[in-house]
Image (cartoon, rainbow, N blue to C red; front, side):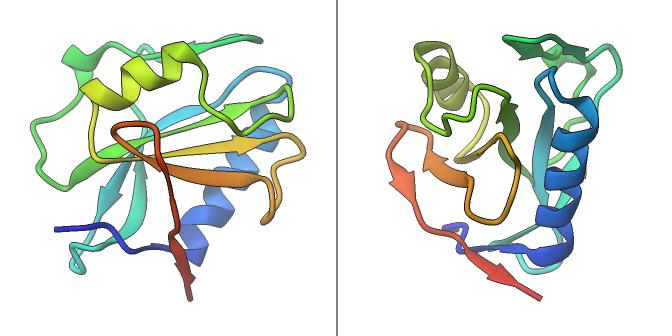
Amino acid sequence: MKIKAIRRDCLEMIKQSAKELHPNAFLALLSVGEKKDVISELVLLPQMIYGRRHATFNIYMAPFDRSIVGTVHSHPSGNANPSEGDLLTFQKHGRVHIIIAYPYEDDTWKAYDYNGEEIKLEVMD
């Protein structure tokens, strides 16, 4: 099923998390709830590493959960375009990926499919 939207409260949590970790990068997994086409939750894993130029996670710490559909991470640099490393991650870890760039506001995030092509997600209340 194609992911069509993200819940406003989930986007707010992404923005706040990125702001709190700045200048380090934020990283989490994205999960859908009852509506299988709407991102509604963040999944934080143990042993995540947040650095100034990268954030990483141990995929073996992730639960086997079909509701996990992709990743979200921040770019403290202010550029929401994916790097080569991001594109590799996209291909390995889900169907939809969000990059939120500094200053982490409503107009500084972009969503991408697993090939790194930009996609549009509606923000739902």
